[in-house]
Image 1: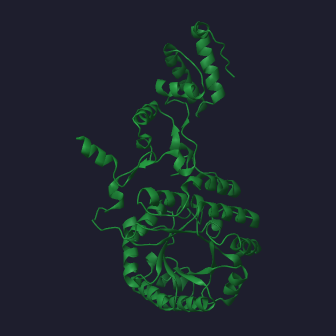
Image 2: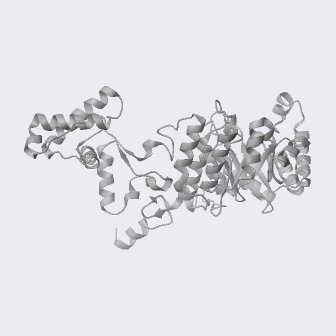
Image 3: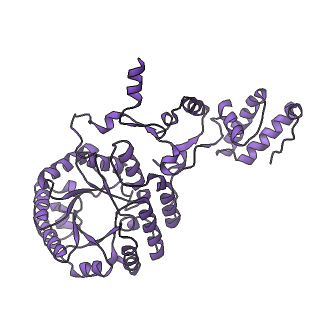
Length: 434
């Protein structure tokens, strides 16, 4: 490879030196050669305090809701949604949150045609409403909702008219869009635009879509509504595709993405705000307007308030994403770092989300490279001939514990090995295992 081609490969659109290095192709074309419709501005609409609270075991007080909203404002999220009629706590919290910042627009979930819902949204100071219904699938409408599906569509349109007359920004948010007959969804969205709605939401209520399906319908919707209104995405994670489907929606032309911190929500949850934010920025090159360096702090706050630990292997914010656990990766990181490209080793460097760096942990996968790295981190010395013995002791200890070896135990192992081999005396230092 010539120098010119090498530089071209490294410095493409998917490379931000010192931060990340991903394939340029993500931002240009998909495998079917369809150009992406939206790689510009993407607006985040947070549903943590609405659907997130519908998640199993999530119970928030009004002050806790306000704390989460304040953190969303710090990150730069411009919109959030709540369901004020659900409880006094939600009504109180939405009222306080609506007055927090002019940079935050608040939306209330409302039932189509329910004047009391609109009155309460006004009382709480909401800027907009999400006019929502569960499904317009014929069988589900008949058996679960005791209604005719076309009647439900008519009710949504009328609900949008009433909400616009009341002075709200309005989202047309029919649930279960992908099991709704296409002709009915098209009629609803077309009539919703005529009724004055500001955006329409493509909703995968049960997380059953493939990304290709989500992208295709989003493109279809754009053809129906043109540029008269925005398109939103609402994705669930029942099959583990909420983030992928949200990105597919962006590629299909969606302007606004509905997400929740840590992916909380009903059943398996909603699209994860932090995952979509980082992936849209890095993989698609979209402008999210968010401060990614505050994401880790935001997710940790939400985890603490909700009592929902973040899995160690969770995408984007899981602690193991930036752990060094094997000597192979330790050697790789050292080499690419020495060559000036630390971003070549992980999907993005820790500082992107506000993490303070890589964490070295020791266990059965440790080798001498990793032992050296940990010794340097702890400002300890050991001769080269002692490394193999320390490594073997660390491996055994990790297997016994079935967990990373604690720092105190590692120091004790180093002290014992140096004492047994006479290295401590030769080095002329006192070694404290504690």
